[in-house]
Amino acid sequence: MDILIHEVGLRDGLQMESEPVPTITKMQWAETLADSGLDIIQLGSFVNPKVLPQMADTDELFEEVKKSGKFKAKFSALILNEKGFERAIKADVDLICMGVSASETHSKKNTGMTVEEALNRIIKIATDAMSIGKDVQVSVQSAFGCGYEGDIPEERVYGIVEQYFNNGINKISLADTAGYAYPTKVERMFTYLQKLNPKAEFACHFHNTYGLGMVNTYVAMQNGVKYIETAFGGLGGCPFTKQPAGNVCTEDFVYMLQKMNLRTDIVISKIISVAKYASGFFVKDLPGYLHKIWREQ
Image 1 (cartoon, rainbow, N blue to C red):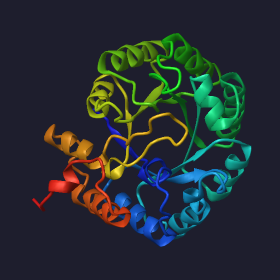
Image 2: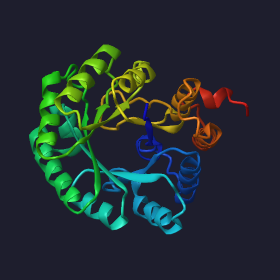
Image 3: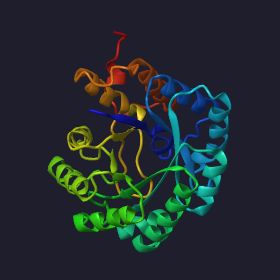
Image 4: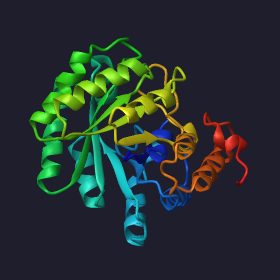
């Protein structure tokens, strides 16, 4: 089973935190996470710093990791528009991530656009990025439900993904922005999409709003999902959803994998050290479990 872990704590994890994290501290966390053996580290998002001040130093973070040149991990970033794309190209981002919400309400709150407007814009940016050789991942946010609208018709999600496929975009993430996913729905949706395009590579991004994040991730793995998006300490949440909640916790997920004799190459203690550091920095308990009870094995 080929499982790659996309650590999103420095972006999705920190965007909900009002206490600004110094750039040097973010770099220490990024280096430790990369040294642990995780595959992709999301350093931040190229967004308006007035809207998300925590992401104001994303350009600087990429400059630092690119200058060092010592990491095996890839570094990703989230973009929302053409300006973000320009910044991502200048920063030489390894994996450019962008997406569209399946919820009209969430789309308006997150981007100020309708789903159709956002989709047309994102497809244009993604294809432009691919035309110059950039690695691109597109997502469907609120793919399993919306905190404002409730259930989202699965056919709407499939329609968005089909438009990605029709434009040659084959690395797709389904994001459970509001935490509404449950195992049988996860299985049904990924199974359908795998049949729709057997050549596609799928990612999953689950929030733990209702406590189902880990089991949903496991079901996704069992149904061919290759890229798993998690955050150290279980940090995270979308600031533009109704009930933000943390991500699946990276170190907890790695622990499960290693009990299954998978990804034994990852040094779990390094991820735990970042979670403990973050817990101390924010002076609060983080949602994850393992960092609270871990003793060096």
